[in-house]
Image 1: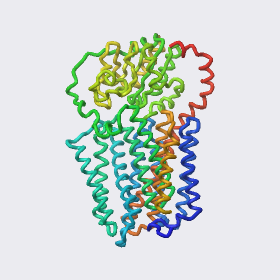
Image 2: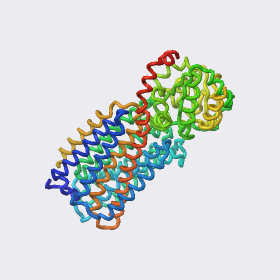
Image 3: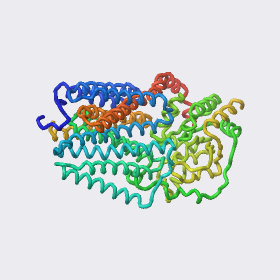
Image 4: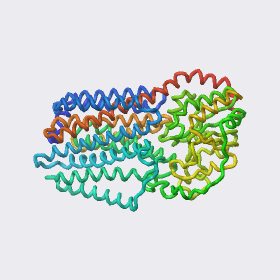
Length: 472
Length: 112
């Protein structure tokens, strides 16, 4: 390795490479085991062990210096990571992943910036095979950082989760992207003495793009966006690996890039929408005008009536959604399900692939409440059973039950697979108000004849009904 | 390592990534995403490498923040994944007796 880039020294020693190979083998093994329920936790530990090996061997490299700063950085990061992870509610998991993903992207961009400053410091030329990855890592890392922060803000409801679409935004985004690419090309042509001002402009441009790219996407689509940004950050890490000649970064970053891409595709398939449509349509922005909504009569019931309907049913299907997560209602719902089962009611849970804010979000919450695995039924499996179901109880779910997806070809969610609760003999919807879900559209289900609305938060309602069922 | 070797590694790693996670039950999507999220925290190694050459204040600040960010990504990512999966383990442990039960009382399943 005679033509080593400025900062990558002696990473080429056989021992170091061997340790990196060990590390990424452990990553691959860890991910593989992470795909099976029984081995998933071990898989995570194996991947973590791989990370430990990679960090330990890197700390022993002779290029490593400024030990005090390293200790500060690692200390600070560990403290924040540990505290945040133990404090976060299970319901806030998607935001947490968004945030961790963002800081990863931020790290990639900062490392690229650092590498750029160092490499161009002495007025030296930066070889293109180092410079191109630096620019890639800068742009993607920065987009990922800011995009993830916006995703976090939307999920945490610091920002409105409705799509925010400025006039000509897509055109503006396109122009901005073109400008960033142009900046990168100019820098590349000028790689003998790249102007730092232009580099900073590219960095800032990418930051603005990251914000603007996620703002017009509605809260319901956030899981897909986070997954996409996860893949982006992986690629940014891989690019940093190219710039620094570090094989561990290349392999690990690429692994995440490809796995994130698969997850993204799987999620958008579940919503029956193409990635392009989802990213650029400003989903729901058009039909979200609240004033358009006409007043229609709904049937409202209380906990006692709901308890009677449920207690004397033969079969009940619960359809949980994000409202259950927000209200932390999973334990109350489990209690209600137990009460019904004691009375001989057949109880199942219908899990829409994108219920909540991430695939598997509902499964995680219901597992936390000890709901048996056999009762968690996937959409394709439960839909044929719904016409024979006495009562379907929708708990804080909205768009994933909206019959407009099937009936109204003009609806923004037309074609999205739904849990067909409107087929059940009776539907009880537990919801705080008639307000639309994340797609920002009205739900016809609420106005159907066989639908009763129970206006309450999910947790209060589930405990009240459970108490009433006890007394039947 | 020359560029071609690196590109070879990149392409192969991409295929490994596709193959290794192609069949995942929906239940595990969130934990798996969180785990792969933790793995890209490896970019923190880049921070360890670049900070050694940091000779002005700006570079030192950037490097330290990068290391802190990367560490949050790694530590937080793995811990949160472990917490999530911990809940599944609880269910898996008592799954066997439940499966046995389910087999002995099939009518409720068949009767709906």
